[in-house]
Amino acid sequence: MSVSRRVGNAVVRNYVKRCVREWFRRERERLPRSSDVVVIARRPAADLDSRQIAQALDELVARALRKAFTT
Image 1 (cartoon, rainbow, N blue to C red):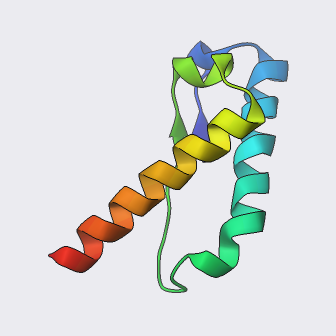
Image 2: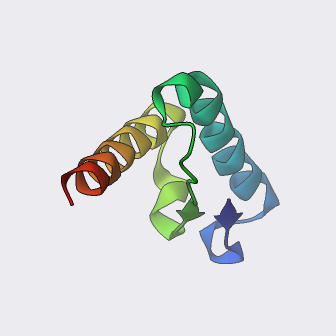
């Protein structure tokens, strides 16, 4: 996981990282065991609350899984 300094100060960056880690903790069983997921948080992540971050991750992972299993 990577959160650039451009996202915000240390407090904001740590908040984003905590939200992403919590999402992975809750969704770990849903992800394929052989998968690797790389998260690079960008500047707009600073404006999201934890629910919005989780929703964005849900959508991105679902899209990635669909793409991985249809090709």
